[in-house]
Image 1 (cartoon, helix red, strand yellow):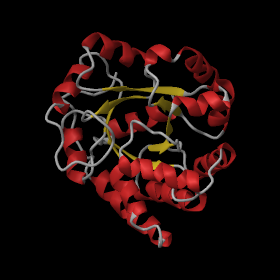
Image 2 (image 1 turned 45 degrees about the vertical axis):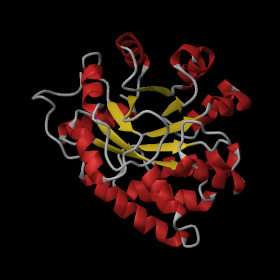
Image 3 (image 1 turned 120 degrees about the vertical axis):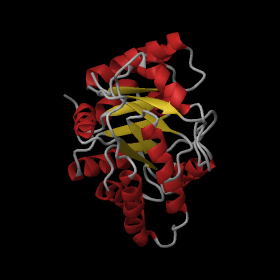
Image 4 (image 1 turned 135 degrees about the vertical axis):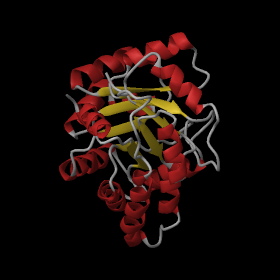
Length: 277
C-alpha cells in the first residue's frame, strides 16, 4: 500500500476528506519555501502538492505564475530543489505530489528526473501540459522509479476519456472545478457535483478537486459534493506574496489557514457507502 492509499483509507475511516495545499518550490526562496511546506504539514495537511518552477506555466493563473517567477529569480536549481524535497521527506511521511511541465523532465532526462524524484521522496507526478496519450516514455520511466500518476479531468471530458484516465491513474484523479487556469473564485462551478458523479460511476479511486477553491466553505462544498480531497493553491500562494518582506510570519499565518481548510473536510459516508474499493 503506497502513501496515497494509506492516507485516503485512513481518512475514509475517520469520515474526512483530504486537504491538499499547493506551493511553488523555492518561493520566495529556498529557505522560506522550506518553512512554507513545513507550516502546511504542521497545520494539518494530508497531502502536499508542490509545483516545480517553470518559466511559462500555462495552466497556472497570475498568482502562481508570480510564485514561479520569484523562485526562478531566487536561483532555484534541480539540485537545490531535490535537496529541499529530501528535507521535507525527512520531516514528514505525507504523500508528496509534484506538478511540473514536460520540458522540465525532458531537459533533465526522463529516467534521471524520475529517479531523482523518487530518491527525494516524491510520490507522484502530474505533468500539466502532457496528456496521458503522450506519456509513453515518461510513463515508463515513472513506473521504473515507482512514481504514481495523476491526470486531470474536467466537466468537458467525454465519458470514454474519463474511463481511460481513471484506469491510468494510481494516485488520484485531479478534477478541475472550472475551465481555465488556477486562481481564486468567489463561488464554485455548479457543475462540479455532476462531474464527480460521472467519475464515480467509472472508478472508486480518490477524486481531488482543484482550481478556484479559495475558502474553507469551498472546501466543505466540494467534499459534500462527493470529492475525496480539496486542493487549494492560489489563496495560499497569495499569502506568501503579501508577506515577502516579513517571511518570518509565514509559518504561523499559513499553519492557521491550513487548519481552517482542514477543519472543513469533515464528512459522512458517501451515499451510505464507502467511496473506495
